[in-house]
Length: 226
Image 1 (spheres, helix red, strand yellow):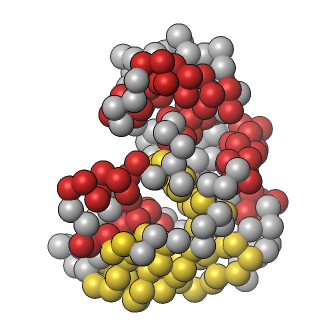
Image 2 (cartoon, one colour):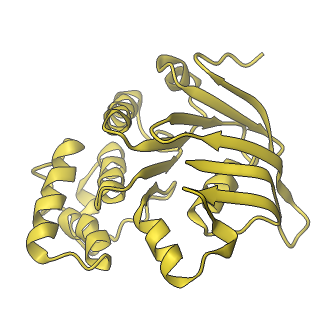
Image 3 (cartoon, one colour):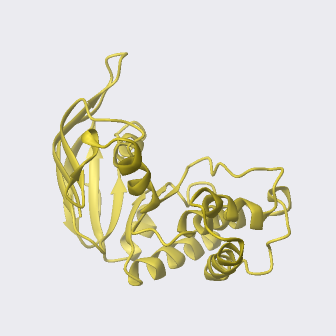
């Protein structure tokens, strides 16, 4: 479970990215995090990943307060979180297999286990025969699916995706949503930041809208902005 209690984040330049956010996300939920650019979506995700710390308030995952975590606790947290970055962060000089395997190597997995897990996640995202190809050989939609595969390597409890359909065509966007929906049905908690209202309304899921760093909407079902 993820719980934010009166969480605010103010940057050194005075920007108030989040203000008084109270939110509880149960295990196994699928959350669409929406809002205009600058609303606080990316900051929200980075706080949960513990790339940032709140200026005030309390943020806890599975009962552990992130601000109080140190060393091993932080590593343990991140092993339970898969993150799909907006800029993908794939390594151009490594093939697809190597890009996905890297996250498992960091976890200290054995080579045989890495080979098995990489094959499983590439198959899950529909890229089972792409392991020896390089990022430059793939389309934008395929690269996004590689990023999802890498995030899923290691069987995380949580998957956070920052605008995963933002730079792909509609057909690939739907493929990505289908993958995330399947992952969620397998028990993974999914939080997806998006601007795509058509995708949001296509799935009956909980929608959380941020505006100027505050939660202004939090309901399950289709969302239509007034």
